[in-house]
Length: 388
Image 1: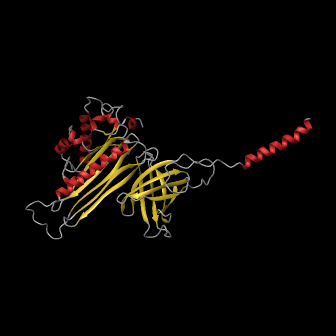
Image 2: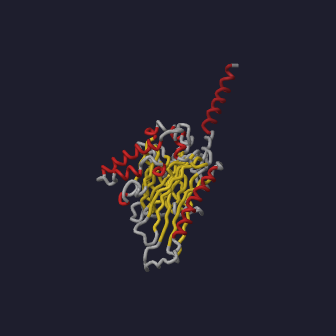
Image 3: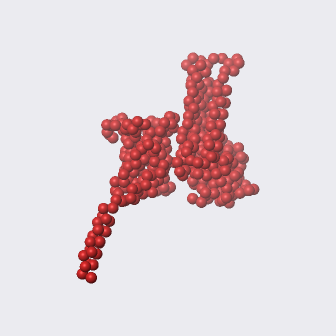
């Protein structure tokens, strides 16, 4: 009996071993948020696909300063898209990255034709852990050392939406030869995602920028008795750009940089405006919402900002007079109308003329959350940010 069983058991063992060698490995899951319409690249190393990371970048390519890029990294794969903020048309990307961070990204038009290649290095900042990409973009058939190759550099934006939500750029462009003015406006909109408050945010942003455009058009209309401007004089214009300070599922903070010039004026007018929006409850966030009820938060902010501005001024030949600092950064709500939420603290903008002469330009300060710990609310709209 035992003699008959031995050959049988050997055969079974061989069959099982053979099956283990020939069984196909499970197919890797497709990376979420990958660029639509692009085939998924195979994992050339085999095995399980690493958990993908979705990151957003902003920077420059050649002479263009408004490059925005979205990449899904699932080593060794990279997929995504990029666009120019002033144009808004997305260009698809796919490629690979090696363990040292060296990457190659090929771009394709909607018809699937390759139109260029990004080659560079993906590095991570040792202090804050953010990613930076830098290298060269070349046309098909063009070499990296070619004098016409375009250098590019982008840095990671603080955008951490889940699912398929993302920020896209919209624009308003208009030129009027008769009244000699130009309008060039870009503004953000949230696309995708199931949160109905995304569209509420979009509506608030559209209303904000269209109001400014309408006011500009009204101001450039000729007034009764106005003399025609000298021939060849500079026309009027308005430009609005934006920067995302933070975007999460529960909140978004955006800074708008507004610049305008009216024909015949001595110099342009520039200022900042911010929108901090509660995506959880669908409403704008007021500065007072961040602090404990009854807290003297304006005094806390003013104390920090005045001291910091004086320190900066002293290091730059007293470019900001003390009395202007006291007036422009004192504990008044109007002085703290332009603020934004960041990972490390509250960003405060002081526009030109606010704390110094026009020649000194605008000033920006970051007030660390640690300096606000006695007055800031740990249960307010930025509770999730404070817990990071």
